Image 1 (cartoon, one colour):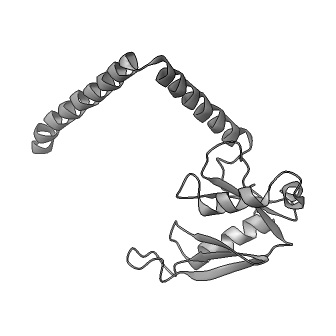
Image 2 (image 1 turned 90 degrees about the horizontal axis):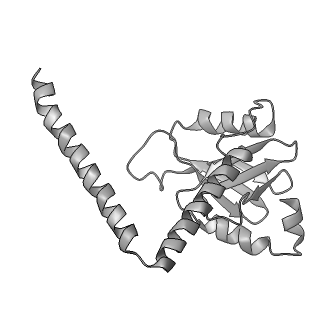
Length: 177
């Protein structure tokens, strides 16, 4: 009973602050210039198109769903090594390295990373499936047709930048992806 008595005012305060935030955004939009309004609408449309493309390509799923495919086997290997939700992906020469901390850790996670899989470039291709959008998704496609979606911490990670440079028009790697 005491929790309800203390919690109810906090809920009302939260609702009031939320309404104030919405009102502030509405006033900013009303007072913004036509150019700013157009940029805001264009950005909203771009985000909507990106989100639709993510769903259409199945990038909202972790992998293709086939546990017997190379992607499914890699996921099983990856998660059997560590229950930690974050992983590290690195490109090293003609290999794709996947690393994970040995267990669920919060301190020195990066220092404790261990390579759990090393994929030769001929077995899989790392690609940016939505190069026309600013996004946080990468696709690891295997030779057997299975795939794995990787979500980066940054919207335009260093891997995105590297892949964009590698997949210039006329480049043979762009055809592989």
